[in-house]
Length: 143
Image (cartoon, rainbow, N blue to C red; front, side, top):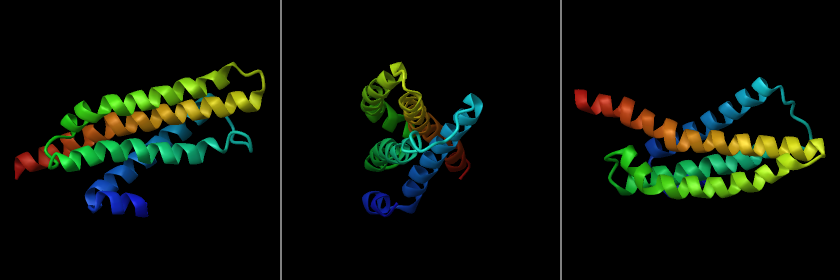
């Protein structure tokens, strides 16, 4: 979080990145509960990886929004969303190879890693922009 604050230099953007990360991790936990996957020593490592990914994707989008003068988060996603999604896709493809493993520990690690990628990507390029342009956009129009 210190690095995020140093990079973004504003508490609003840092709060957005943190909220996006927490939402992605929350969605990962929800997916785990829905699929009845239990945390064990082998798949627990997917969580720190998800924290790193969740921050990275949200920071890229929020940084573009900052550079654009906080005009439109949708524009920030249009300019950086493709690169963020492509980066995530390559990682998802890599982790998906573990879904073919016969070893249950490797399979579950791959499953959680893929779910973490998808949840953090969705939080960064869908939920965060929707929140900013929807809620904050509505507030600024009223002012």
